Amino acid sequence: MSPNEIEEIGAQVVDSAYKVHRILGPGLLESVYEAAMAVELGRRSLHVERQKPINVTY
Figure 1: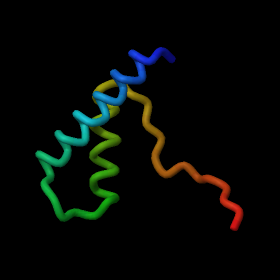
Figure 2 (figure 1 turned 60 degrees about the vertical axis):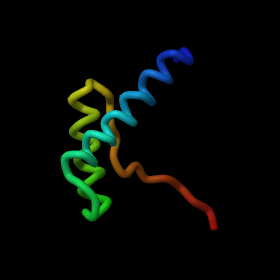
Figure 3 (figure 1 turned 90 degrees about the vertical axis):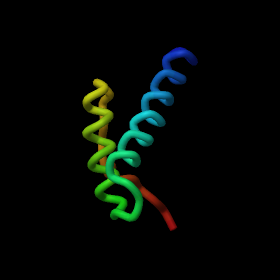
Figure 4 (figure 1 turned 180 degrees about the vertical axis):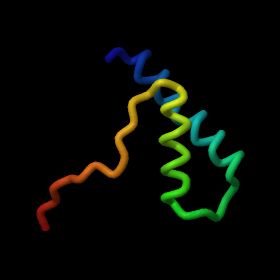
């Protein structure tokens, strides 16, 4: 992936977050914003995977 592609994806993510916040406003649960971001990014044809499990050793 080229630096320009990464920058474009980053711009789409920031723009999506701004749109979600503008529409929903502050004060909701994180899960609500997560779901809305997944919808918004999907509308922009970006692949989204939510709540991927990760291994952590403590």
